Length: 275
Ligand code: KIV
Image 1 (cartoon, rainbow, N blue to C red):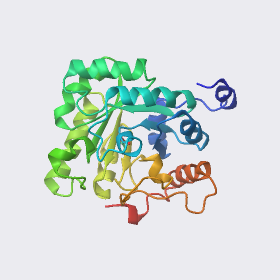
Image 2: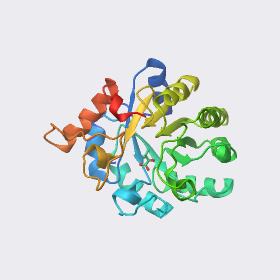
Image 3: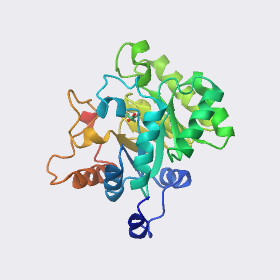
Image 4: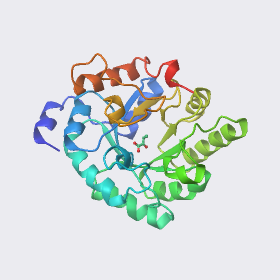
């Protein structure tokens, strides 16, 4: 971490898992965003976000791939190392890339690398019922874990595209059961991507751990967006749930502040961002 940041933010204690739980209990919305380098990490910290994800979305917005599948563990570690230098207050979560958690032992080795080499405080992996043993194994080794449900971009080739998940009753019920089971084995956070708002609200209500949404409606405990979508610099078509926060703002810092404030005040997401 840059020394000047530590001094500047001394009165604002860093966010940890207990902070996120307290925010859920108090009904304070969690503002989360992705970052991939030290400069933007400092900027999003200054803007007041609570949680930063070094997401495998870096494969698309940084590396220019069509999917997140080509991203490697070393890629995420590289970006984590940069991000951690710019952060003081937000909690740092890192993605476990495609096929880096195919077995319990592999998941543990790789989560340890993300934490020890990258500086991550929590790891995120995509999965439902199939990942229960892995989440349990990591949790039993005192690793903070976020389970990513709903649209799982690493499964794009299996699923046949980026589509809203959990629209049918059976799929929605299964997602709720998966979320409860993952919480039951020790997941500390659940992230829901691209699901009907009603299902996002139900899962957030039923779980004790905080639930962060991206395209999961206004009633999850927090919201996360890809930084480059917030700044409107992502190339190509934007997802329905994203919003250009640069509109009306003079600088990227003001845009990220506007995002964090809109999450806190529940102005974002609006009905047009929901399924
Ligand atoms: O990789 C990423 O940036 C993510 C977000 C879309 C939540 O997983």
